[in-house]
Image (cartoon, rainbow, N blue to C red):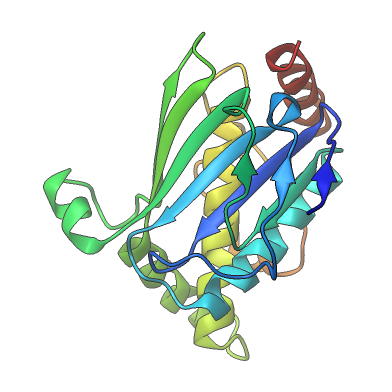
Amino acid sequence: MTNYRRNASTVLLFWMAGGHLCGLAEAETINSDRAIVVRVEDKADLPLEVLNFARNHVERIFTEAGVQILVELDLPTWSDPPAVEFTLVLAPENLVREMSLGQQVLGLALRDDGRNSGRAYIFASNVDRHAERARGEIPYLNRERARGLILGHAVAHEVGHLLLPTSGHASNGVMQPEISVTEAFYGHVRFTPEEGIAIRDALDRALE
């Protein structure tokens, strides 16, 4: 077993793909008192290929903000509960209907300020609708990559809501209410420098 010590500016994302744990060859024990964990529950049963494409976008966006984000396709063995843990649910179509949401809504974050916890939702059916429109703008983008492109940016946006000290949207970057598909495709969508500082400061405070 490998014991990992992460620094304060680290977020760990663990995909639970299709309700099954997959990815790592052996169990890993992570020093959870230094971990910010986002547990991603795939209740929409998205293909592993789409999750992997999404992971690449999430990792790029956070790395450019100066935050190491480790997206794993498995769950670790915790010696102690994580210091900070969020849940992000990839939700199926029926939840969109139950919550009376429009087709433009990709996600929703519910913060629990002061308790180092929170929950966010990504609506997979709406991701698929946006992905089809993205293919119209970028014809050579295949379906799986388009879904991963939209999903990855939606995940980064909602995790941003969970980590940033304020809950509002920005006028540019990944925290905009609407993101340009073309800019996202070419890797031009990112956290602003101020948001990067705010996220790193929030991580440091959460792990003090």
